[in-house]
Amino acid sequence: MKSVIKFPLTIFCLLLILFLSFFTPPPTDLDDVSNIDKIFHFLMYCGTMSVFWIEYRRYEREGQPWSPLMLAMVSVVLPILLSGLIELLQEYCTGGRRGGEWSDFAANSAGVLFAFFICRKIAGKVIRPKSQN
Image (cartoon, rainbow, N blue to C red):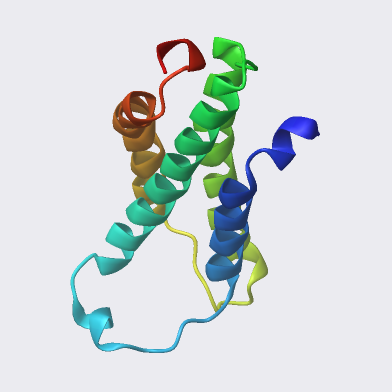
């Protein structure tokens, strides 16, 4: 539980994703843009996991790194599972207000994976371990 407190922005982003996933958005001019929702899905999950990597690098800098397995679970597996659960809940528990889509799940997963392969490297260069400062 102590480690969870070290990730307040990531938790805020996840709560924001949960909120946005279940409220009914008002119509906008962007509704006519092809695949705009997929871009937003990608950006929400990539952004959230990028925030996670920044916070993790700060946490790691304090000398408390996680095992590679734990890190993979928290940074890849859990966000993808959460994304799938949200899509299922949208499909079956919103009374038709929202619909779950495989393409949304794919965009979410792509955002998580992009953050894992790219943003964690960038965060690692920006926030160096204590021994390098």
